[in-house]
Image (cartoon, rainbow, N blue to C red; front, side):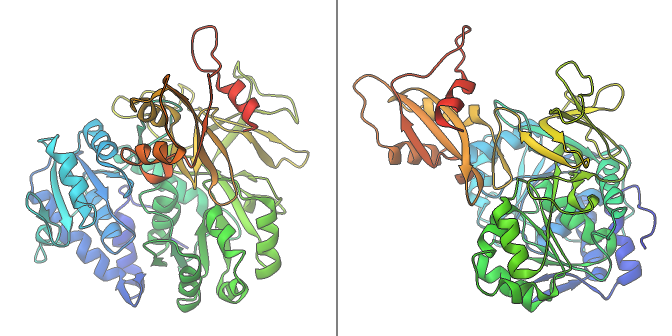
Length: 506
């Protein structure tokens, strides 16, 4: 049983320290922090952030790996009444600059590895200060210097409808937009997940935190759930199939919060069954899990992998096969308690039984719209149209049949085709380009570029990919390039992605 949730998400840490102060909160390799130690560090950093004089609600960029720094910084930012803006550690300077500039961030907290990119981004943004966890190069402060270890406990500032997190995601074209998540939405989804039976997380659980904490799945379904239950989170900086299995075995992990590429890799290893001997619950989200992999994992471990569906905008969980009598392959299950879900046609009317429709949802876990003005949020009746299409089978279990027509999902991360296309056509030898998502056995989808060269130009696929890598994070870069004489266009001159998909079989 857990106590009623506080108004501010950081109150979960305070409560965990009160009820289970000596329990291991986070484990990283052979080191660990207790909940009491985490709470003290959160207080010390929150006091330091307050001392900087940042106004309430100021945005703070978090470009951090899965180390002790992430949970301490995250909860300290929230306790100080500020807004966390977690960003992908693989972002290029241009991508990071966009997130910082668009959010109006006052501060970027990053790592030694990310310091060069952070400082380069901040050089174009005079209002952004850079703080580095570790040795700081010129122009940056150090995270350690912000801690006020002799400070009194800090009373959490704000909560409820106050903005807690801005996560850059969603949309089907152009640059990513910042989804605004309140304390209410994040806490609400944790409470909803707590009503699932069997329990997703308990205070006895040891949870594998290998998914990036800058992603909403790792951030709230992983880190948030660990804090709510004063469980133990095992931090893993980067996923390696063999090393992660050894981590599961060594720390007697009970809960795996995973994504399809992890299970694809594990299912091929001979000792996965032994490593999973302590696992109580295996979860999968961010992208569909191939049914053959689900069956293979069940055969070698004896565990069903329970799939779920959600969005950054919903904090994130909406459905899970834990809500179904049986975990069917290719199903996303049923809505979790507290989430209303309906399938609607293009006019907003509920579809007939067995017909596919757009998933529309309502619940306390919904975001407050996109930064900065709340555009694109739930409608006047509280419903949010996800853009994803599904159907319900005869048992009431949901099956995804399509995504946002443009969005590409690579290992659970959103790739926006126009962003990639803009980079491609910036090459002097490329006349036109279009990007599609194609099935990939390891990442779910990968990026395929169809390129029209200028007359007389001569480019190789490797040169196109290398050009992309100079401006885009690796997961956004095309993995395959096809050179075509022309692209199909609609009557308005727009590239016809539907016809391209049909031709490419995508």
